[in-house]
Structure formats: C-alpha cells, structure tokens
Amino acid sequence: MAVLKVTDSDFGKRVLSNPRTVVADVSTDWCPSCKLMEPVFKEASDKHGELDFVSINASDSPETAAAYKVEYVPTLLVFKNGECVKKSVGAMDKAELEEFLSEL
Image 1 (tube, rainbow, N blue to C red):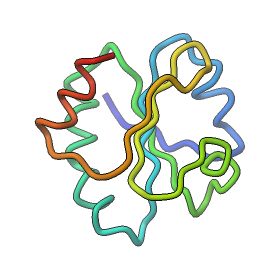
Image 2 (image 1 turned 180 degrees about the horizontal axis):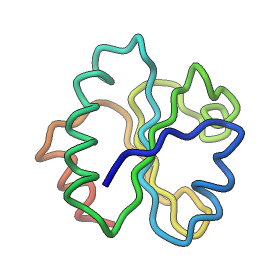
Image 3 (image 1 turned 180 degrees about the vertical axis):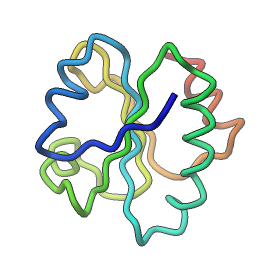
Image 4 (image 1 turned 45 degrees about the vertical axis):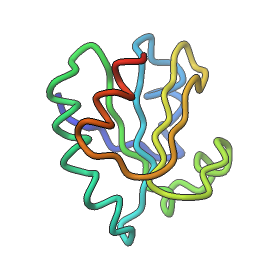
C-alpha cells in the first residue's frame, strides 16, 4: 500500500475522518534520520494493509505539527477514530517499527 502525502489542508479528511487506523510519519526533507526511516516506513505500509500510512512534512504543514506538539522529527503518530492514541519520537529500524505497530 502506498504512503499518502498529507498536508494541513487535507489532514482532517485523510486522517481525522478516516475510519481506519492511521499511522502518520511527521518528518522534513532536510532531516537525515527522516530520510533513513522513509524506506522502512514504506516497507511497513506494504506489509500492513490493515492500516493506512501517511507522510506529513512538518515544514510544509506547521499547523498539524504544532497541534500534535511535534518538536523533533521524525515523529510517528497513530490515530484511531480521529484521536491521536500513540506517539513515538525518533527514527526506528525495521524491527523497532514492527514492534511499535504490533502494539496497535
């Protein structure tokens, strides 16, 4: 499954109104750790079809980043029924991301 790019303008529709569980990767183009995590996040999206995966560029979507108190990137946010139910700050390798997702 593809990772959908989301911005401040469509965040409500794509994430908060989504009936499925959404895993959001909040990152930036200039962050080295974000670049390392990008293929790991994409691979997880291909493996976990029961979840929706979105990418939010914190620089381009400052309202969303501020609303969820994203101070460091990458940050993963998990949304269920329009609420943020889980947050993790910092890059993860494949095993760490799988463990994070297994707890959902």
